Image (cartoon, rainbow, N blue to C red):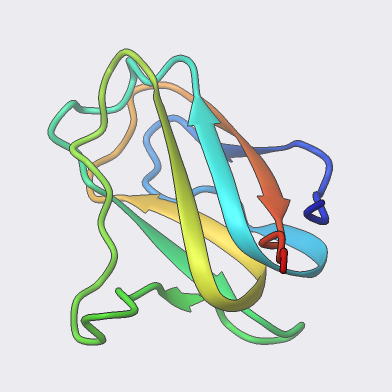
Length: 120
C-alpha cells in the first residue's frame, strides 16, 4: 500500500495567480489535486506547478520528464471543477500551483500526496 499524506488544502487568493506553498513532512512522488468549485478561474487559464525537494530551496517550475525543455501545463481549467494527478520522477516536499491569469475570488483545492505503491 502507498504511503499517503493527510488531505491538505491549497488556496489561490482573490486577484492572485499563485497558491500558497504546501510543505510535506517528507518527499512524495504522486499528488492528487481536486477542486470542486473552479468557477472563479478564467476558463481559458492554464495551470503550472512549482516544486522543491529540500528545505530552504526556492520552488522552481516543473517541466515534463520526457521533454525537459517543456514546462508542465494543465488546462484549460474547467469552471465546473477539476481533478488531476501529478506524478514526479523524484520525491517533492514543496508544491505550489500557478495560474497564468488572476482568479476573481478565492479558489481552494485539496491535495493528497502519496508514494507509488511497488508490487512484485
